[in-house]
Length: 200
Image 1: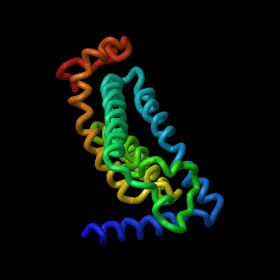
Image 2 (image 1 turned 30 degrees about the horizontal axis):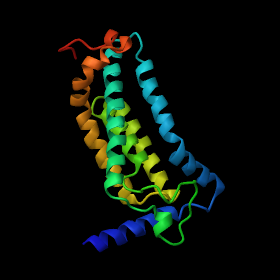
Image 3 (image 1 turned 180 degrees about the vertical axis):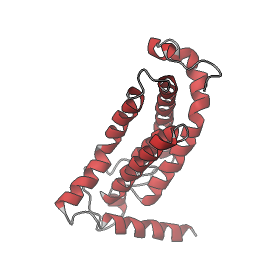
């Protein structure tokens, strides 16, 4: 069963990585997705809060923003820890014929994908609280993750592992945020716009 999963993982990787190197325009799209789209997601997260300024949704979106930040931090810590406990070489190190479109060190771990973990942590944290915006964040996280495979730096199972971890830390974000609230209250902005206890 394990060998079959590895074979399938490698097969899907080669199919997706096979997209790379055929068109300069297509390569540019996936390089953007793999390297820069996660920063666009961070900017969109700020916009998610900013567009609700002076509306009845603002306090709730500040809360959601903090949850997304907590989820991203938990996801980053989790993926680093997993990579420390079990090192999986990048596909361009372990496989032949990989087209690598972005520079990554072969000394860096492959599983789970840090980009997939953090982008899905943010996406699920918003999705659990606001479905309309959440679908947009999930679509962006999916493209970030797909791009990491196409450009040759991650296996599909690296992405799957990151997505699962991202979902789990998004679920954990609210209780962790609650535990951190005494410290968050030291920040004037958060204290000012904190949603009253029991409010919707």
